[in-house]
Length: 240
Ligand code: OAD
Image 1 (cartoon, rainbow, N blue to C red):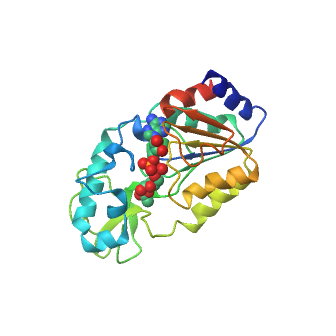
Image 2 (spheres, rainbow, N blue to C red):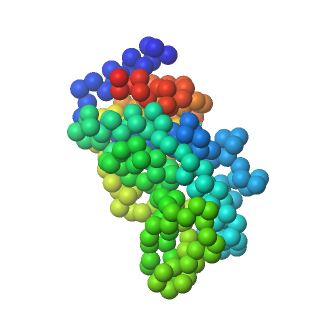
């Protein structure tokens, strides 16, 4: 492992353009369940069964109960050493972008600013009827949350399966990945598109690629260095 850390650190030397792609694994050490891990089930539902427009249409209360449960966990959580290490990186590299799939807001809490949230944010809501968007920090969620403009039902302002990502967020991410010299992929199973394709794009563009994950993924054999272990332990070693 020591050799691999050295190899990864050498990959950063003299580089100015860096992208970091994170997934639920970076927040696991903060106590937030990942989606596809053993602890990822809520009342026996998988994320794919609840994080859909169809599920919300069919049973909005159930979907809100799930988000209320996740909000409760997140409200008690703090950023971990992995989040802080990434926040420090943006001050070291002149051209830096953090691309996160997480909706928990822990990167921002750790001080990250040069960041896009691909899948939205759990503390934001939008109206299912009008164009209202706003913040809602209630824990537990007061059901039904209603729009202050039109009294329509509010939904979480997150991207669900089957929904498109914000075109501007996605193009910012793809542009940064296209020009980056180093891509660090942390704590994602890399199975959800289009997020996973950002990692593949970096590989095919010839960037120096590093993966940090406790388990192998489809990316593991294709990256330049794969670091098997916990993000909160490995990331601080990379920026030491
Ligand atoms: P997953 O739950 O699919 O994957 C989490 C990854 O983190 C796995 O590969 C784990 O091995 C790894 N992991 C767990 N603990 C770790 C640790 N301490 N250090 C490093 N790695 C660790 O989560 P995502 O890949 O983020 O989307 O899932 C992608 C999207 O699918 C999510 O944004 C969410 C989900 O359903 C939506 O809700 C739209």
